[in-house]
Length: 352
Image (cartoon, rainbow, N blue to C red):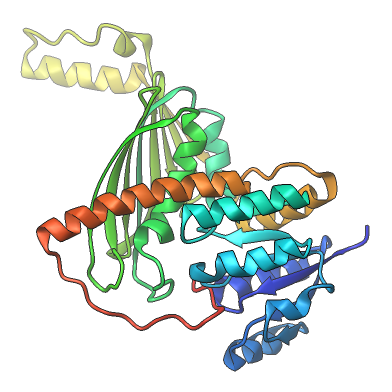
């Protein structure tokens, strides 16, 4: 199998991760990493025998596909140049800064017949894949995605940095139109929001409560999916899924505890735990989701298949993220929460 010529645009954290993984894959031949920063070029050269160039434009005519891992503000410009040149693109999330920019890239890719994939990598997480086998007719979703700020990705807020992962997962599960959005949030480090909580309501009745913070002292990546017959808990960090199912007795009319003594209630509690609550813990072998994402990118280029996170899916997640940010901004202004300036990221480097 002839390898596809791949370029990595952006030599920051994620660009380096993509470079290392793609270099190991049989599907790709990494031609070069494009980054105008000498320090980034030197770091890449010290780790891998891969060429470096200053601009993505230098790679046009030399590559078949590209991973765009620049700051989000440059996604539209860089990916637009590459798509117009006939180069397939995998763009790190968010796809662009605005929905209109995303639509432009989607239209260009469709017109050129090219693969446009967006790096919502949690879709490739083995724990999420395992959970989807049990998640029938979800009615309520809770997600918690919290970290201590790494001081990367300062060009975007926590909604586009973290919450957008769970927005994409919920949109994938919902299979319905979004009806209503509410959100609150605030800024701690700045210049963009560092914590946010949103409530999404869909036309089929599904409600999602999403929380994201990058000023948390504890790391958490969890999601709980409440279905009509079971509850699925996902711990993305542990790569573990717990499925809880209730007996028909609990799912029906419930328990009659009227008139029971204290001891009677305790006995019934133990009986319920033993006879009516069925828990299954699924420990999923940890894989590398970005590696699987790259493999799907190559497979879709070769076969013409549509990626599971296509350009349209990335645009739809961005559209919801924009609505969440509008509500967060309104809440922020009303409560006059403090914001502090932060230094701008270096050009071309996607922080993470």
